[in-house]
Amino acid sequence: MWLILIKEMSIKQLLEKCNLCPRGCGVNRIKGETGACNETVEIMVSRAALHMWEEPCISGEEGSGAVFFGGCQLGCYFCQNKKISTGERGRIISVSELCDIFFELKEQGANNINLVTPDHYVPQIISAIDMAKEKGFDLPFVYNCSGYEKVEILKLLDGYIDIYLPDFKYMDAALAGKYSKAPDYPEIAKAAVDEMVRQCGGDKTRFDDKGMMQKGVIVRHLQLPGQIKDSKAVISYLNNRYGEKIYLSIMNQYTPMPNIGKKYPELAVKVSEQEYDELVDYAIDIGVENGFIQEGGTASESFIPEF
Image (cartoon, rainbow, N blue to C red; front, top):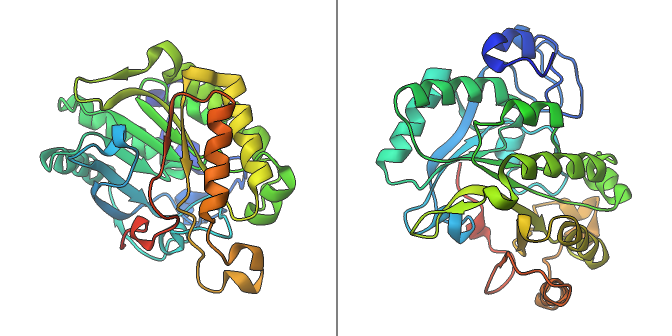
């Protein structure tokens, strides 16, 4: 079923028994049922604006045209954007309105369209991209996701997405189970990044004359406090498997959310500069060359936009 061209499939077919993500809820989102992502068939957008805080080759000086979608299928306990990942903030829009947003962001000077947590809206997004391209839209599309993606769904995006910007959160299945209720995360993410690299990585990577990425794969890793061993395992795996086929982004912006210490006291602190420096030094020592690091102090609430 999944290998049929999306144009031959209706949104109804994909969402009346939804298995878009690895959770495999099977709920009928057409009838208003919700599963892990907490969203129905209606598109919930929490924010659409120029975003200056992505990697330099994504944001540039003008900004990335970020569209933050409501809901999330992964549901990490430490999520920095719970207001939108739980669907609390945002408004309902149509596919045609989503297409209009693409053009509005382009008019504001966006370097690309940055689809943030888009996984559970893949059919609607494909329809909006088709609509936009029929009207001559020419900016790159960025798929900014958790890494917890089904390969079958990613294949539907082949030719639609120019830049993949996934997280790779954990190598340890126990940590993934503890903090995201997804012990299968490492194996799911490995297969997903393989598919992303097949579509956009390696010799397909391109930049324009301003240094803005036009096609490629950037894999992010958000370092968690006290988990240096797992972070090193993530960086080592990505470097050994992909080398210069991808760019690595090592992030120090973990921000403890209110009350997180009640359940996980180890997550109630920021990543220390010593921890982050150790991870960056490790990446350099094992030969990582294509990468981004964050300068300055760790964890600032400025990374969390208002919704």
